[in-house]
Structure formats: C-alpha cells, structure tokens
Length: 362
Ligand code: BGC
Image (cartoon, rainbow, N blue to C red; front, side, top):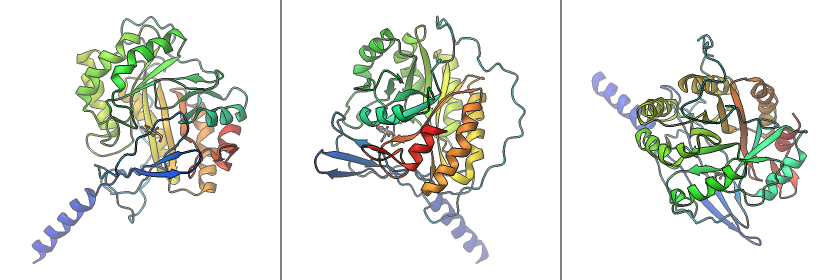
C-alpha cells in the first residue's frame, strides 16, 4: 500500500512538472485597431516547480502587422498555485580571470567588441512612437539603443542605436519567413552603421524561435557570420528557464555546436523573468551566461519581475538598474517593455507609467 501511495505521489509530481501553458490572447480594440498579445511563460527552477509568467505582451499599433494567433498550449510548465521559486544562493564561484573583452571570435574586422552606445539601457518596443516618447524622457545619454524583435526600425528616432534582430524561422506575428528578408535588411543596417545584430529570439522556447542548438548554429553561420567583420554579432537570446534543454543548458549546447560549426559571435544575449524577490538570480544568471560564452560580454535583451505590483517593480528597478549599469561584463539591457500593458513603461500612448518614470530617471 505504501509502495502504491509512493508511486502515485511520484506520478503526481511528474504530472505537475509537465503541466505546460503558453497563451497568446488577442484582443481587438477600436480605433485605431490594436492587437494585444498576452503571453504567459512559466518556468521551473531547479527541482522545484515554480510559477513565473511573463507580463502582458506589447501593443501592436498602426504599422505593426500582427496576425491573430490561435491560443496555444505549449511546452512550459506552469504551476500557478505553487510557492514562488526559491531564491538560489548566489554563486560562490570566483570570477574568471578571462578579460571582459575577449579576443575576437574569428576573422572579424570589428575594432572593438563593445557596442559603444551612449548608454547601455535599451528600449524594447513594438511601436516606435512610444519608444521615441520613452527615449526622449530618458536621463541624458542613458537610453542608448533599441530593438523591436524586427529587422528594421520603422520610425525610431536616430538618437537610439537600432539593433536589428533576425528572430528565427517563421511564421510568427504575420511574418512568414524572417530568413528571406534578413540579408537585405541586415546589409542595409550594417551600411547605415548598425552597432550590432541580434540573432534568434528564444530558440530554447517552443513558443518562440524553437530550434535545436545544432540547427540554430547552422542558421547562425549562414545568416549571422557574414556580418561578423562589420558589426557585433549576438548569440541567440535564450530564456532563463531551468528546464533541461532550455535556458543555460541550451546555450551550453549551442556554444559547443558553434565550436565545430564555426559560428561568429561577439556577445551572448539572454532574457530573465522571475519574482522580484529573486533579484539575485538575475545577476547570477548574467554571470553564468558570461562564463558559458567564454567570457564574452552579455546583453540582457528582455527582463522584468513577474507577478509584481507597481511598487514592487519600482523597487526592483531601483535595485537592479544601478547594478546592471555597473556590471562590466554586461553591455546592454532592456526592460520588457515599451508599451502600456501591465507593468510596462507607459500608462497610455502619451504618458509614462510610474515604472517608466523609474526606468528613465535612474
Ligand atoms: C515576440 C515578439 C513580440 C514581443 C513583444 C516577443 O517575445 O517574439 O514578436 O513583438 O515579444 O510582444
């Protein structure tokens, strides 16, 4: 009987760990037509199932083409009612002796491995008008760059360095094939002085670019390597999922694959979502990415606390931003995101939210 009860408990646990949810809800609003994508991704940390959801997705306005995506049930464990992820102890590993700016990754002619933005704070946007509003409110020089998960900037002020992203294979958000358009957009961007290029968006996540490390390395060689002599090239942007085959685990395999497939990349990109109380894991995660990438600089291209109130998010930013500014091996970071959804940087199309005001003034 005890054995049977034990077996049932194990099955329950496995089932709990495998409850996955990633939702894409589209809400059509009137005049102008606004599509809102709401995503929820919940990760499991270590052996403990933990909640974690990415905040509501960005507004899609005017020139952003969005196709309705049917709700999906994809591979991300969710345990809404479970206790928050335990804060992992800060790593005791001593800092590596590798230089923050490592030697080149091949035949690159880029003179510096750092992007040289006016400031490393970035704007992750869908609507360039909102990005320009946040950017113009930003403390002098602090907001140096911007990205929109896309290949061209469509109306972004030249005061921010636009960083194009390859994203991955289509279809996604109305784009059937990102590979088709990439070389022409990347060539243009590089000719216009793009300071860097971003590669795939969350290839370790089935709801995003969804690729194996080997496949991502192969496509990286084809689509990113040609620009390595002209600008800085990023690794794919990974999640901070602790599931096997995702997050850091995926990145380790990709770095290995890249050794044999000869990918060129100068920095590694990552995302981070967790409870505000797990703030230490943000810095730990950045350090782990830096180490896995053989001492290359890191870009934190999306981050936000999850399930946080406005006040908690403000407090989180007050603690995180000075630290992110001071980490020498971190070259760029961008809060998720410029938009007027919950916990985003604006409260309307014309005003910053309290969180936005924090982000621009710290
Ligand atoms: C998606 C983008 C989207 C952004 C903001 C990202 O995860 O890959 O397509 O624009 O979220 O919603």
